[in-house]
Length: 128
Image 1 (cartoon, rainbow, N blue to C red):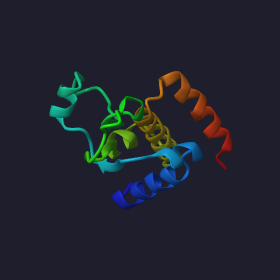
Image 2 (image 1 turned 180 degrees about the horizontal axis):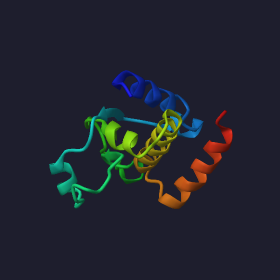
Image 3 (image 1 turned 120 degrees about the horizontal axis):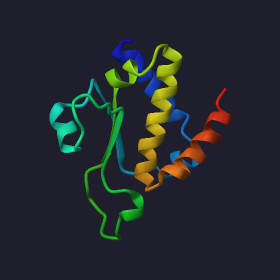
Image 4 (image 1 turned 30 degrees about the horizontal axis):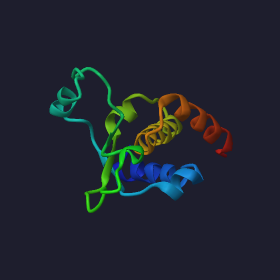
């Protein structure tokens, strides 16, 4: 898949985020990288053969204090090659991008995995 097509899928996933996420998404930038570096995997305690599809870096909204001001944006990174390798079709890539983005945005909001599962289930039902 081309980088441009992958970017389109990411854009579509951003536009399709649940409205409550879109309204509250604050001070976060979304990036696409080919794959995580070995040093990143090492810093995260992962071995080179483990798969990392996305990463949230920042201060979750639930942990921000009133002094949270003038800080660089939080960062969500989606890793194109691992996502593509986990999928067989473009439709699966699109679904994995949505899933990974939702998961990382959830971390931005400080949402636990159980609640993310509930939100994702509702999101799937609302998709065409």
